[in-house]
Length: 168
Image (cartoon, rainbow, N blue to C red):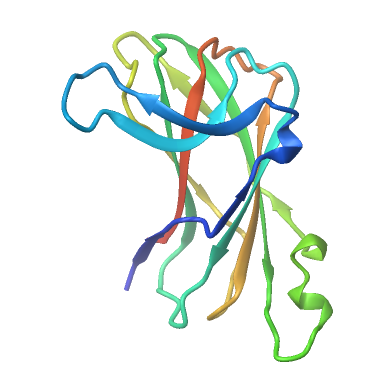
C-alpha cells in the first residue's frame, strides 16, 4: 500500500549563507488562505545552497517507491531552478552506533531536477518528484540534502519550496 505524505521533522537552512530562509509565499488570488510556508530561495541565486532535512520513517513502512515530492511556488512567468537531492539513512539504536549518526550517513546523489516557470504560471504549484535511492527501514531517519544550484539557474524571483516524502 502506498503511503505518505510525511513532512520533515527538521529543516536546517543556516548553511545557505542567507540565500535560504524560512518564507511565506503570498499568492495574489485573493481568497482567505493565500499563503504557503516553506523554504525560501533568493532570486537570481548566486551560489549553490543546501537545505538539510530529516524525515522520521513510520513503524510500518509503506510499500511502493520512496520519493521526495517538491512543490515550488514563485511569482514568476519565466525562469528555471536547478535542484539536486542527496539522500541516506540513519538508524537509531538502543546503544550508540555509527549507523545512528546522521552527519556520517552516506548520501547518494540523485539526478538533477529542473523546475521551469512559463507564462501564466506565477503563483501556481510546480510539482517535481524525485525517486530516492535510500531504503529506510521502520523507525529509521531519512537524511536529505537539497542543493539549489546556480549553474543554469535563471529564476529571477524569490521562490518557496515545500518538501514531503511518499511511497507510490
